[in-house]
Length: 408
Image (cartoon, rainbow, N blue to C red; front, side, top):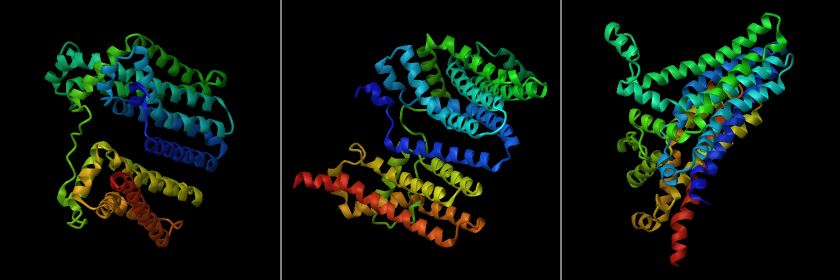
């Protein structure tokens, strides 16, 4: 595999988590369609279009920049078109969480088809426009930051004190988020106004206009995409404190692991620090619990919720396997520090870091919903603990036990 292909590759764990997220969102959308009367399906699509515009307006810059693969791209020096394909591939994963449910909603909906087609076009359009507008921010934001542009804003700040409480270079980003949401809202409202005016046949003009505007916005960037990519990456890295693969997050405090016995606490703390640097899990775990609550609230079939919980437990515990890479787990050093049995216990504590929140989330559902009981909470907590044991055994077999077999 070439270096460029390796940079674009995604681990099975990430792909599995992404598939789980898309599946859950699609289930929620399908449940909403089946539980709503046919005459309200058009409104559901309009709401989804507005929600997508809001998500894209905020997510584009956060998902695309700063890019931790930028140093590798500088070494490879791909063509502008190759860079464009690379960034579009990265953004397509985020856009797919919005576009795929929109298509599903359009297919499952009854009644007039124009609102559904318009909704899909709006979601596609705002996703493409958000990508293009974000990539083009670098030169504009650098000009604002240096003072060569945005003098009117500086004068307004000096005279009236009005403005945003952010560095001047980030003001174009705030304008970009507003433009993206307003464009999506215009496409949604345009369809409704044309339909109310008795022109249902041309009501998809709103979505077509959004998509056409997005394509027009992207076209001038394609020929010189490398210039926009590197300048936008450099700007966001400087302003947002991004780093070339080194996290600036505060490490987990050693004293916070009071629940780990002192014998395994140092190794557990070091492993959690490594894991947090490689893949901070807090927000993803919180999102997973929110999706679980949404499934229960929507009244999704218990078998679907159980399947989701099983995948959630497997993915969450599977992150421990990230610590088995040779650069993170040198087997000879590990064996000089602890026995394999101690590493099994250490890795179980790493996985058990989220066992308390998991049990608490299930307990909250058992308290608020009649669909789940305290027995269900205890069973799933036991399943989580058992999967953590299995993951710890597997990880130790791949590192310490494998090294011992090589020396035998």
